[in-house]
Length: 541
Image 1 (tube, rainbow, N blue to C red):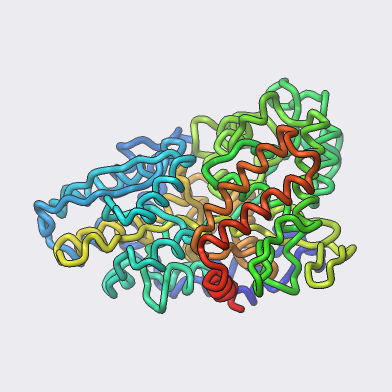
Image 2 (image 1 turned 135 degrees about the vertical axis):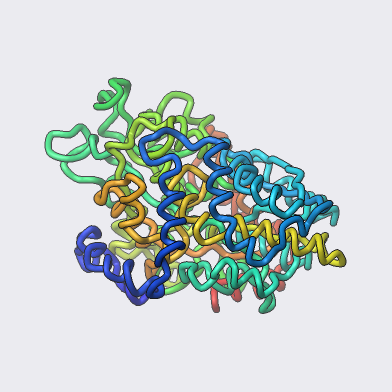
């Protein structure tokens, strides 16, 4: 999907997104996928795996993951002889978040191990522990894994220090990199012109909401909130009301107030992007000429104030101060607590295919809320104009092979073959449609008919896929920079936010100033001039 094909801002054009999707359905069926791409056997593979286990048939199990992995082995068989990697041992480091990620990879790769003869040892990390563990390996130079599940923001730390193995050309062909949505193509996954990443995810934040909270006579009001100002007001108005699905106390928007190893900062970014990401510049975290933090300008202060206002009003569920992003998505929203959430897009597949979800019939999706005003950092003034800026949070998970395999061609090919299997075109469709921790990220994922065959209804999938497509291709998307230390910045920001939310700082401004001061120290430690150069390059400046 090309940006120019979605050359719009919804508010400015006042165009219903579902109407737009109907108009671009032909694009999804034709222009985005080469003619004949799903003919005969290939289409049968995709149809077959999408029926494992089938929407509405309960959460997938290890048996299902292994079946999908086996059916998708065709590309491996074309590049690897049976038993070719006998005796090779690989170590894989990734997440065990919500029993997804590494748990699925184990199942997907068991048939690969049986066919190739290789064996894999696993390092499983909780989301909150991931950044510290990876940074320790980078800082000490003691990389004790051959393959890592990693997001693009870490590329400045890992690729920039020569810790990864360059992707062979045969892998590029096997995974069909041309099928990636444009925002995941180079320079993402590359460094100094070399390619290192097999993408397995897209990662942007989208807006999820409960339809039973909104509409004629509904407790949340006639229309779904479209701006953060409306989100906050509805959240306050719902205090004291009863949830129409569970009968428990009703709640509006679910902010995670507890840190998550740096990943929780993305959720403040969701609010701040609409206020801070002006269409006149790609920069919204740092001033590009100086690396001076923008996080304490009026836009960011407003975002922090929004959260503090809801804390003071008592709008959140009890003990929200201890709710991290995993809690807000999986223990609250999907379980029937709260009516609005911004999260990664895979909440959409989990709502319909996870045993933990009770909101599958009432969940709907859109891009992140807008703001009815935007801060112009260049002029230093607020502008009274509507602004949308969906947050491209984390730029997706990928599989990276480490330089530990260099010098052993058999081990190197085995590691890249495992990575290519996990990032395969067909397997990725299944991972997008079922609970995996990942969301659609290939042009070929946006085929409504394939999802319908799996058991999704058309209206739901238009909402779910549309929220991802609209975000990826938005002309004012807030793009994350791939700079060294990015999660050091995020982690210290979480620490300062926690103090602010707990009342240890006197105001939102004081909280923001504390974050900015900590960011300045990190930049000085890493090297300001080098950070400026990498930051500007990451923004295309």
